[in-house]
Image (cartoon, rainbow, N blue to C red; front, side):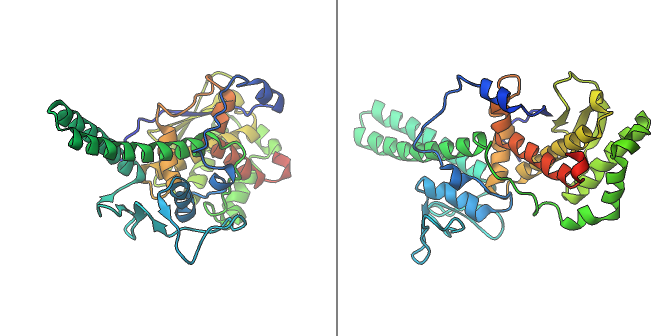
Length: 332
């Protein structure tokens, strides 16, 4: 279960290089020394818990390295197996090594520790008012220790969510190559060829779009294929993905098979992200959940460049480009 409220995620057109230079010129660029280096936070697949999660906790003092496996500057694939405060059990839960308590997600662990810090501070105020300064100081120090830890983790999470423009996303582990070699995919590839597409009527195109969505959903092992509707939106929006498992595609681009493929892929990937965010089996799953929070998601009308750089959108744009590349050079 998610503690965050989610909002619809639209697919908007990618900016040109000139537009990217002009947009967000006054964006404040944080030089926070607590944030993760790009080389450490990039290249993480959604199933790569051990490396992605370990890197964050190691960077901010929450991991002890094993004696026989220290990270070197040249060993990018090194993994850390000893967590100082938290580790994942075989049951998928996260265990606090100090208390032994189990948490269903990283998000739940963070929430509990935020509440604990607030409780320590409230108790400290009580003892302070009653003249027991030593006890108040002890509790305040405990609260400060937790808050420092949470602040460091927050810096890492923010960096991993909002600095994704140059990440090298890969998708080979999500979709088997056999899918692209299947007769069904080859059939869809022929349907979306421009010559074939132009001969189809409105209903046939809508049906083809839905069939593409169903096939891609099965390839990604989605629990339930989303409902796809074709609607009219403003010209700057290609489609929306709603958190009730509904996708809406802009009818203005119905005659452009390339944009239909990319939009379906983009929005289906959002469905995949939401599914992963719901169960949070990996660190990236938690980042999805964080990014989908209405308070953390950056809308395109606020800043197109920042919208494209956030994790859920940067990855969705990368996926649509990966997916359409499988259709062949004619679709580039």
